[in-house]
Length: 184
Image 1 (spheres, rainbow, N blue to C red):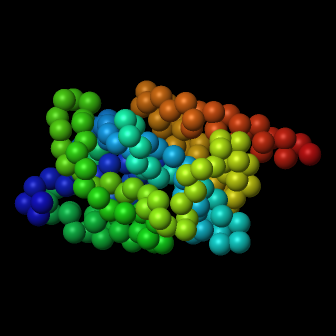
Image 2 (cartoon, rainbow, N blue to C red; image 1 turned 90 degrees about the horizontal axis):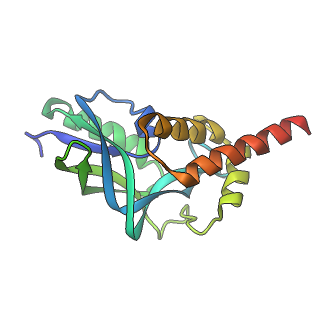
């Protein structure tokens, strides 16, 4: 991969805040995983005492996740991977994998993706949407409110024309919860 283009798959904050320079950006689909608020965030969007939730790619038979693929030229491989590993592997709840992506323009590429380790203690794949909404509405971490993470991701998906019914529902429900909390 050292002399080729490196592709990175973004499905959450990497879509709206990649934090690195890229040469190309394409809408892409990763098969075998779905986007899910299945990781307790104890660093970026919550604390050890009051964890928030962040998105992860959770493996599921027949699932697919639409997001973006970012390409990085050979001269930026090492710096980009170093940055991503520092950002994404902070608690070892994510696993760095290389998986095939189908780009919207018809190409198929191999891309680095960060998927949840279902055996990690931060994994919480069994939470229902209402419980997710209540956690997201109150949590705050080192990178800010959990609500900001949800809203930015939902807004970016909408701008890209990517439908994610669960994220849309969560954004609506969390807004209602935070407005009710502010009014109460």
